[in-house]
Image (cartoon, rainbow over all chains, first blue to last red; front, side):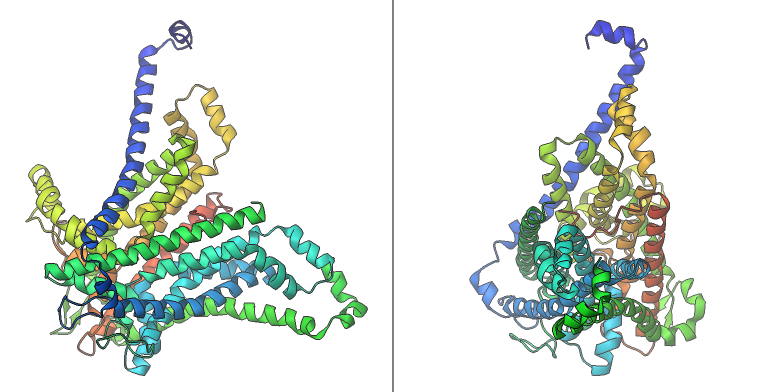
Length: 295
Length: 329
């Protein structure tokens, strides 16, 4: 549009100027908002990286935590504990979550499907500290002591709605033509589900499971109530209290000593690396799965 | 078609044993799992109420308005923590809501196509940072920065306001609110972005054809069309903010008092439970904390239900407002 034309079309050029100015202002400020969010991510991850990398060593990863504020140790017991707690939680939550998703997508009448989905959404909205209180009353009080297993149960409850909701979404993406082809061959419904629907959706299901693991690996609130007292050294018995990386970070962050803070940063680096790697792997699975389903 | 095949007695008889038990078995197992999800939700509410019962029968409904938390005299009230929860989440949303809407506008309307996915992924990654790490960062980086720079600056300009009075402090309502802003922004953004993407292209083009600038199009088409979705997203963010225990417990200072100044230490319901539940002495302190938990649970469930109703009434039936993680990819 040449200046002459613009003059003819927009008689009030002062107004157009003002409108363009407002437009530019909004463009700039929303760009800044996006940059700001990315900057916060980089600043937090950058802080963890720069402050944690110095204390990270083979020794740190392979030595158990020292006693009573002795910061010469490492986090091997916390790594082992977190792996055990999260693995048991995943072993409980992933099959159940998958079954819930199979029920709502394959079997449930519309109304009951809505009820289950609503319950899952509400469960997802329950603050994790409340889940901690629940499991405390359910397991810790009757047993009279904390345990890694109690922590696993709480993490499984937190994972369940994440696994189920993502699985539901992935299962509904499976092309109906595939299932219809199986039905047309007279194949039983359960065989269709197990041999056609689930393998087709495998990548996406894997994504949901990995993201749920990533989500609970750093979960701290319920662990404070359920699994924050444990013996020194590397422990592997889930019926007793187990060390964990989030609790190590939490307790070190509350300490006044700078050495403890350095250790907290190093443990945070280990945790954040684990979570980010899981996220990236999950995304890769999802991309592959989408391609497979032609979505 | 399938039902017809199954009801045919000849075909049914020819089906082998695994198929005859396989179908009801899978249906039964999966139905059981679904029932379990509902049962767990109910059991959580029941168990928390059960644990809180000694405190409920002792303090009654007056617990909500009692401004005292004294383990020595065993007099407990929720007022300081309800206050802390409301103040920190409100401030967090005052920052996070406009920020998230602006980011969503950038991601759906402004960003070059090549940048949209990477930037959206980075914003989502912010939600993946474990809260205990954000809390650690809050204690050691953000807190001192608030104490040395932000709070003195606010005080020197707005010091006449009671909310910006008193001495700066690294641990404060304001620091907690900023940490909550960081946690809620990616959640609100992921929902508003999805809602913005449902705005029909022809409405936008009609607006452009009438000579609207990009912002005028957003203001007159995208925002009105998405209003219910935006409100739902913000309320969902509120649910996340009131329930956050760890990061808030790390940076708010843990004082059981009501204080007008945002520079003051305080506590929230979730943070108080995280800080005191483990090893709480006395017969009444743990029940009192469970009572706090029951109030928090009620807050959280109401907020979630309201968010969902608003979004559905607003005509976004197809928009799944649970920020389930796959959509974020």
